[in-house]
Image (tube, rainbow, N blue to C red; front, top):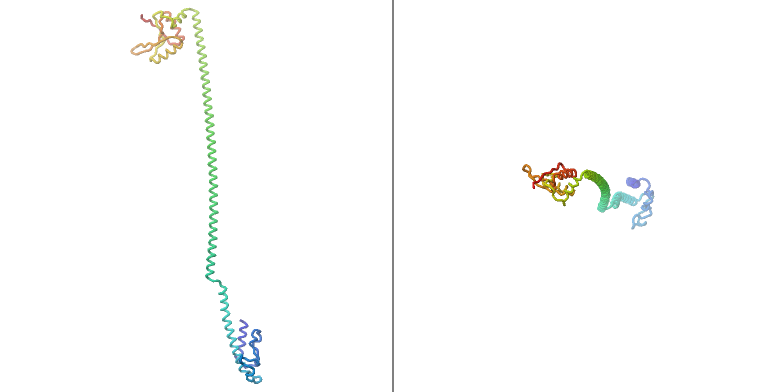
Length: 312
């Protein structure tokens, strides 16, 4: 732009004073690219113009045609420069426009890029959701394992408690059984001791009976009178005991018969009620009856047996 302005100033000076000073054959000699526009006096200004058709020029006088040509050239140069100045921003704008990408393509590209970016964001969200879900699932699995371990531990503890209860029950049962066995042993020992004591008492009674028999032969006769083979020898009956019920009387009869003594029950009315008396089946004379009564009272531990005479 600086060079164009300088050229314009030079042309302007020539137009204002074309006759001032001597004509300079090359007013644009300072620019090499424009040297082709400079003409000498001997050259034709137009294609159909020859050197012979040029009018004669007075010496040291300016050629009007040449001046006109120079003026035309100046005007053309100014026009060219003006067009160049106007064309330059247009070309620049065109270049910018050319360099500018297509708006639709740009919008499509931007939309595509936005979609890609959105897809990336969505993929990142999905991935984050998967990771979070995996963490939650892992936490659930871990919690399930812990809960299962607790349940298993509770089961083991319950099994231990149950086993302890069973063992304690077994020990307790063993203790009870041992106590029963011990009690049975004690009871057996007591029974055995009672048997031994009873045997001793019985032996003592037998011994006492023997002693008594040695003193007199009357008890022997009395014992002989009790034997089943013996017949009645008198009219006296020996009543060993009595009972208010027949059942009790029968029980006493069974106990006395165990000692090989034949007895029976006899129902008797006493003061309006029935009493069951246990009497010896044989009748004896008074003396034998009294001896036999005393002997049986001691032998059978009877409470006051008595004798009665029966009418024949």
